[in-house]
Amino acid sequence: MSLSPQWLDELRARISLSGVIGRSVRVQKAGREFKACCPFHNEKTPSFTINDEKGFYHCFGCGAHGDVIRWMTDHQGLPFMEAVKELASQAGMEVPAPDPRAAMRAEQQKSLHDVMAAAQDFFVRSLAGEGGAEARRYLASRGFPQAIVREFGFGYAPAGRQALKEALSAFPEAMLIEAGLRIVVEGKDPYDRFRDRLMLPIMDARGRVIAFGGRILAADKTDAPKYLNSPDTPLFDKGRTVYNLHRAAPAARSSNRIVVVEGYMDVVALAAAGIAEAVAPLGTALTEHQIERLWRVTECPTLCFDGDAAGQRAAMRAVVRALPMLMPGHSLRIAVLPQGMDPDDIVKKQGPQAMEALLAEARSLIDVLWEAEKAAGPLDTPEDKAGFKARLMAHADTIQHPDIKALYRSELNQRFGDFAFARRERAPFQPAQRTGGQRGGAQRGGKGQPWKPAPPPLPADATARMQKIGSHDALLAAVLAALVARPAAIQRHAETLARLHPAQSSQAALLDALLALADSQDDLEEGRLLTILGERHLRVPSAMDFGEIRFGFLAQREGSAEELADAIALLVEFPEVEAALETANQRYQSELSPETEAEKERLRERRLALLARLGQMGRARASLE
Image 1 (spheres, rainbow, N blue to C red):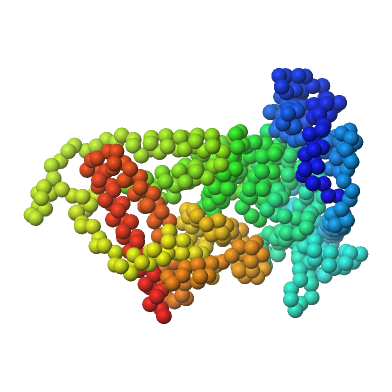
Image 2 (cartoon, one colour):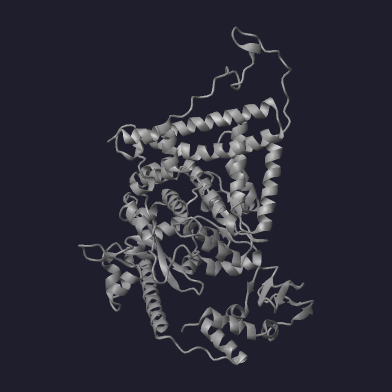
């Protein structure tokens, strides 16, 4: 049935939310709103508010939130369409006639739900059968109680390539393929996607199976991914689905906490330890859609990341994605696990209380942002510090909410001032020693370095090259093309690449995908990197993106790997130096002193040197022809 947003808005406008809720809960007038004791959790003091003007209810105790339709589905337990029909009857509105195309799509989805339910039954039976012995031994080694095994629906996919097809012979093979249970390869017969794996069902908000995750059991299969998820299907969108949310949400509303861990086995381990409000993304970095879904449950989810470099990159990516979305009262907290340990290790070796202590020590989003950028590079010179400040302000400027943006800028500026301009003990003044040919013996080049003249002006051809490149976008396009051609380089340069902030959305999306793939190898289980990027509708830069400029690192020849590393370092440093130079010029205008002049000159010289290096990169590629 097709219901337009306009029709649903009209329905909500005609219904008194406080009147509907008041039939089940005692409500009291409180100014322009109503209040009540929350029906979603036990409380003695009312924290549940109802706003008829805005059309929503909200509990400040457990975070329950929604409109009149959500009330009917969450509290009254009605399916969506039944809730709509009930409310339409009260409002005197006619429910629109069924749309045949929408009905066909709904019927198709219903059929796929039947397929997934049958597959789940088959996997559970297989786990209990003779072929599931190894899977049962693995579950026993993890120490999962039988109650947890049953609750999470563990199963086993037999090793045969046609086992599932034979078990689900009542369904057409086309449906098995559409549900993501079978793989089609050109020139070969279709075969089962999951083979000889411990299986876990992935469920939607209503507890229906929409996908599967499988863990490999054979230790000698080093060429196969350790974890394998269903592909995106009409039922399953992994960028929008949060594993275990249907079970964790009620517990999270009671505890006012939701814990986001790396994978579904971590979720199961925490549930076995008594932490029921744990969820996980599915083979990808946490997406904007997933953050929004978590915020509907609780206002400040806690994200757990490993203490290694990959974990820190993942934490920073989550911070960058959340910043533009921040709303009053809604944020993230970051808990860092000991290096080399996952939640299961912590619970087994140190007990659940150790995990609770780590969660209690989770840091705020702004603290993580500050520490990550502070650790991103050296902070020895004024230009280093200015670059650090520029990066912080660039992050703050991505925040869409004006009040939060202003508060972030103010807080980060205050922290930077305390850090950069802290008074230090200075050594007693020592007159400089005069040396022949150097008036006054003054040194302008830095610690212990003699003064050096500024570099000569750039050649005309290098300046022309820079004009063609235009804000170094062409160099970034060439670097991205080189990384796609050499996937192994992505992991090698991941920490430096994570500091890039492409201006073009297409380049930013491609870079984000490459970094995610570097951390999560199961997306590379089939085909080449280009195929994966194509499926995600991400365009790989071509020669047209960098015009007549040609870069040496794009050629497969000796030394090209080092040139690629230089290019990546240049992409990171150049905008930082540009921002630092702008800050230094402003400071020089307001504070004329030898120190500010020296700082400005050092940055100007560094910028010229970087421009010259970029010109050399262009010449190096041109010389290949």
